[in-house]
Length: 331
Length: 215
Image 1 (cartoon, one colour):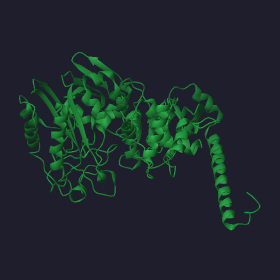
Image 2 (image 1 turned 90 degrees about the vertical axis):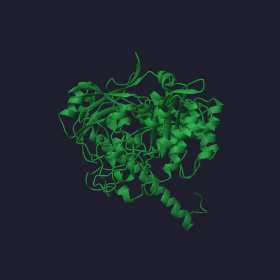
Image 3 (image 1 turned 45 degrees about the horizontal axis):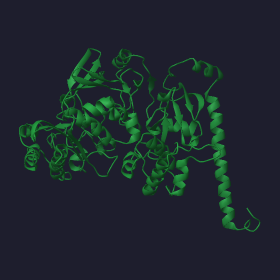
């Protein structure tokens, strides 16, 4: 590992200034992804700015939304009373991710920013457009079993990438219309969660729209009535402690067996947490039934494209959508 | 060793091996203690007491932390993980290095009472924290109830993952996640056992949990 300087600023402003004044510096919080990347030589910052002591841990009920500090630990958020009462889908998604140990260490801000788990990205001996732009994508012709089926850039493109966002929490947050609050040298701004992560496009090395030097302060989740009919379904290679092959966050509001509002999002299928807007539209106003859920799943899959080893996701994903909707609706 | 087997070549070899192992451990511990002393000049120990922040450059950072109730003041390279600090600097080799990438749980320790992967933690970031390792689980007179239960239920074969399993199991019970077989399976999933002692580990945890013993 490359030697680095270590500093621990006392205020949020000092932390942001420390990054702004040194292009070789990076924030570190839980470290569960960054230290892994540093050990493998995938990232090698010259300076680490430890933010774990900054006052960004609170989970607060504001008027109209719940604010979760960027440094709240995943384990704390998953058992927080306000979260369980107002946004149980978030707690379900958090508990589906990682292990007891890692949830004790990982922060909300770090989880939002965690890197893809594409094996070619983590192995510096392979070309990877995300790690080394322009070098090529090893997954295109390689083992692409865990890779994306939505929003993949054109395969002939020298900048292609078919990696997926690995976070479970992000799938719940995009479904719940959260907002990310960030602070940079230019001040504070708010980014809608659906716009926070990017599709690979021409710049697969960029996973989010966070500007260099910006620090996530927290996330805000608007009040909703998605408290009763929610479900997070995660399909993976083993029963626990594995990344999603496909996951689905489903939230329904149901009155007299009629769907009055719905949120649907998927993980493990795209470079960003994937919201299923068209399927949502189709479901609103319909009566709960297997048939309408099947129609929604079909609509959701319209733009899916399979590669050599991940064609199974074209079957798995709609089945998972059906299953999650049925579990959420309680049928 | 009795006179009868003294000349048995097989026995001689294994005794020699054991003696070498013992020597190696003693040597490692002694040399670590000496190296540790060399790292920390006396004036600096005093200085560290008054500081609330770890300070230093890319070569050495001063930090103070408690390990198994004992306070340590050290100067370390910021690249050193908590795992390497425990094993290489403090000679606490009970905590195991498995994958060293946060995937196996062999390195699990408690930091401020929470189970944590020591391989994915930089030691400098533990400044002011209380670390507890497998060495502190039992007291001098008796094993911890979970250690007894692991022995009774054969919760191990090679034993390499066991320190991590035990540290994790303590928290699994304390967190209230040991109420059923399914819950234990889920909340112990961060600790891999390549010998496959899982069912026995689950039984051991279930027994301690249902006995109501303090862990």
